[in-house]
Image (cartoon, rainbow, N blue to C red; front, side, top):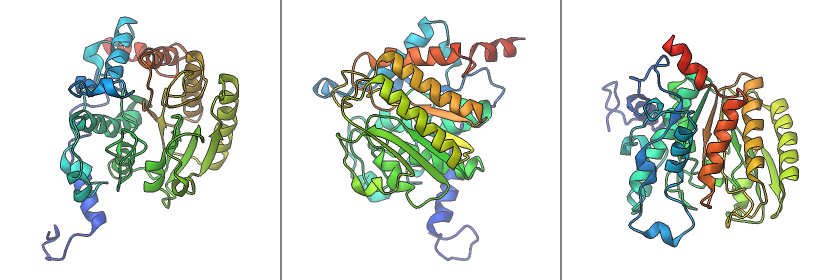
Length: 334
């Protein structure tokens, strides 16, 4: 491929990555910060079924729709206030992934995951505009540029951050990964990148046991199976204080898996629904106290109750004035 300068020299990988990011439509530039939309991202495509295959594994393919419905039922958010993302194109995915990797994917969940990738990328832009954003989906933290794993086919966290570096002109991002599993995908992608600081708190006794990726974690908190709510929250409080002393980000990417819930078949921790709400409150307060924009991805969670727990936590964030949906709308009406 010839360079844009017309010199005939091949375009380098970083120049090609930059060009792909700058030409992408995923940031929805026609949705300005003054829009009546809330920084909550969701698409009905997130809830795509897999021809009955969803009944054969623990992943709940309708979780995200239930979150949206619960927020609407609570009167917190109307459907016309939600931002619907675009599907990521092949050029968008090539910002991180190789053509050979993309060609190797043959999955009935492909469309749903590509739309969720678009939602994760867009959430960073919305977070910078309004201080916070929530993608009701995303958080495929086991996928790196070179390989997928654990229900994760696309590296939406890595894509989100790469887009933010170029399009939002930021250079310091903190990943707070509180899914029950180690976030080995983004850890491999940013292991040697000083612009990204990773705090990962996870159950050390479950998948993925990625000892290579562990070397890249800036701040590692390994929990035992069966860790209960009080101990979990105490560990998190200590970890956030350490993170605050070590790194000052311009954006926080928060991977908020609900597979930490007591009874989750894959997470194997014993955190209560109330504990999940307090956890999210701690992280959002950490961001707000330092005036750092934060985006939340809902990530793993393999029980039917997860959708309700996520919605209740978002409602709690609103009640605690850590996100502001109601006043945002009332100000726009005035």
